[in-house]
Length: 409
Ligand SMILES: CC(C)(COP(=O)(O)OP(=O)(O)OC[C@H]1O[C@@H](n2cnc3c(N)ncnc32)[C@H](O)[C@@H]1OP(=O)(O)O)[C@@H](O)C(=O)NCCC(=O)NCCS
Image 1 (cartoon, rainbow, N blue to C red):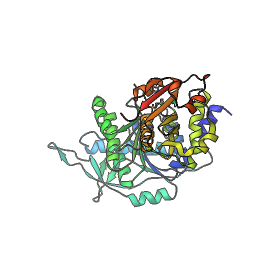
Image 2 (cartoon, rainbow, N blue to C red; image 1 turned 90 degrees about the horizontal axis):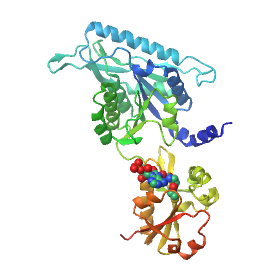
Image 3 (spheres, helix red, strand yellow; image 1 turned 180 degrees about the vertical axis):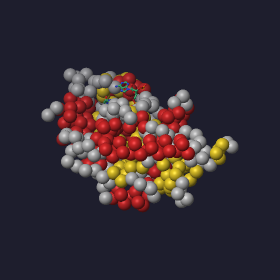
Image 4 (cartoon, protein in one colour; image 1 turned 90 degrees about the vertical axis):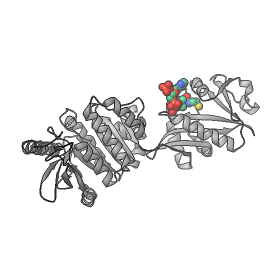
């Protein structure tokens, strides 16, 4: 078996556990559905279903409401919606060997799950059959999810008077996610990552949105992400449909593949417990193997687990750090694994813990991250500056830089 594959599969275990039983709303616009990636996207959704995720798919159609909807346009929209729904139903039924759908029938459930009301007159213009969501029939959707159906919601809604209204798919997806109390809203778009960083707050997202005004589709999708978060959905993701497997990468790897938005900072930094030892050792292993971290191994992590701090995201560990006491006044920050801005927060946690135990000087020994530590307030020091016991253990073959931070400043 390919070693990278085995490592990837092992590392995905915490995410598999964290996502099981959760409700995800996935928005598939007409562009994603019409792309050559559609079959792969459906296979990835089927895999999520097999792994125990409760899935609601909100789909778009080639003809969408974008202003007033006259009867002829409504008829075109209804035809396009019916076509898109039929395409999705057929994609979810193709049992290609080696796909999650082979020998497994996944029922898709759809129907009058959303009631609508007319958008009405806006700026003096009657929007006719353009509508907005009035009610999401949450109990029915939950019942359908409970019997392991994938729920399919189309961008049309019906009123109590029997009228049909065309809905905006982005608004529909955000409303459904909010009303259902979904754990995630996942939106497919042409542009997968809209910023250098993978994680954004809703404020950062809205600032970025201004730069997407030229692209009304993406701008609407960014709005939907923010709206879902405002409605209490803990995380909303934007992913690109062109890249194969992007959904799996976003949900089952620490680095992700899209932009993740949340209203608050969702990454928890906490002290490690015995149950974290294995995951910490796994985080450190590749860096130990490449020589970036001194080899300490799983034994040491287990023995000194009370010295470790971890960063947790969605129930999976994404970073770690240890605070080893050297003497009454000095300690060492070690085994730091960061990424995605987790490093500074782990360092901060360790510094606070050090100060709380009366430590004045914090040492760091590093072969590759000297500049990073200097940027975080450390100064260059010599091996002789280390407390005598630690100096005796200094590995001259590794020849690490010694850095120190005065915590009293
Ligand atoms: C160093 C490390 C902990 C930083 O964690 P992080 O969560 O990425 O922290 P930040 O968000 O502050 O880091 C991002 C910035 O630091 C820079 N940076 C990352 N690693 C760096 C390094 N080794 N040296 C100098 N700068 C570094 C990045 O280029 C980035 O700069 P930018 O914002 O200008 O693009 C992380 O890169 C890591 O795990 N490195 C490998 C392990 C290691 O060396 N640990 C220290 C020994 S105990």
